[in-house]
Image (cartoon, rainbow, N blue to C red):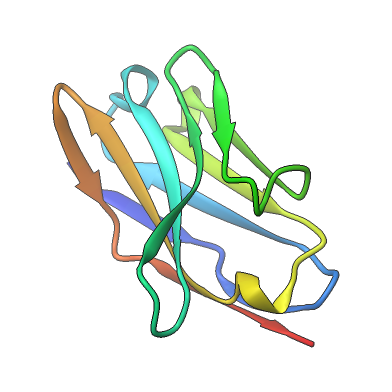
Amino acid sequence: VQVVESGGGLAQSGGSLRLSCAASGSILSTGTMGWYHQAPGKEREFVARVTPGGDTYYAESVQGRFTISRDNAKNTVYLQMNSMKSEDTGVYYCDLGINGLVYWGKGTLVTVSS
């Protein structure tokens, strides 16, 4: 199983970016997918999660600004980030939880300039 993030880059404060996370094979529809954020010098923290049934959960810090969604036909999960802040800077990781195992991607870097 491979999980690959993309879409990172430079955004201005108040701007938007959309991250993508692609999973290998037709397994995404049965797994829980999540996004995590690691700011420079800090530990990785939960951002958002979407279950196979489509239920979504968010960290309080991104509630109302970020939206997680999934396209099972494309084996891809997205994280739409709006109203971005400088504290959103860091590496964003995607994980896939399936059959009791968790698979991580290598991350994509997001930089928000003020």
